[in-house]
Image (cartoon, rainbow, N blue to C red; front, side):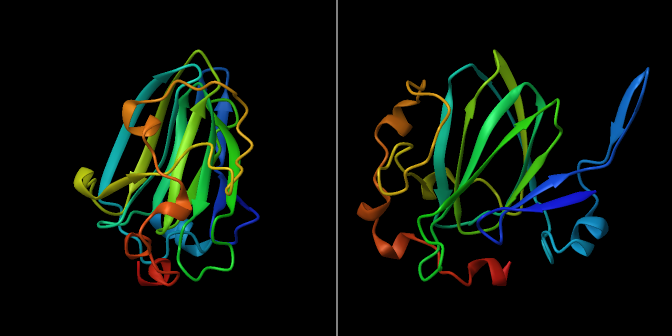
Amino acid sequence: MKVIDTDISDVKIIEPDVFGDERGFFMETWQQQRYQEYGIAKDTVFMQDNLSSSRKNVLRGLHYQYENIQAKLVYVLQGAVHDVAVDIRKGSPTFGKWAGVELSSDNQRQLYIPAGFAHGFCVLSETVMFAYKCDDIYNPAAEISIQWNDPEIDIKWPILSPVLSEKDKAATALNEINQKLLPDYNISLKK
């Protein structure tokens, strides 16, 4: 397993060991002890697994929850996405900064996103099957959407005209969100 740092120290790209031959391949998508030995998801207990399917040019995000704040381990089962994590932790030296990476069924990379980050992805392939592990439950009543194209965050998305949900079309700029609804910098230290 190889762990790659991003521009935000807490966000990690993971390249799991993949064992392949003419029959196909085998890989572990999560093994708690090994990931924790690499400093990923220390003391994290994943509580929920999610799977989504989307078509080309769909952009989902940027989403976070102000209650049941989640750390996530995300990866692609089929297809490809450009995946992004945005630091929204009040007091963080990287507040408003983002890290992004292409995740695909070809490169088999994963992205670890600690608690206190907004998350989003856009679909690069014709379709995608996207999986993620979360360390807390989904709470739709506490979910907030941040504008995918917020100029202050300035994410370099690889698509110009994404397909958005109504919720994401009505998203708020990060600087317009009530500070009480943003996680504290030390949230990832508590989880």
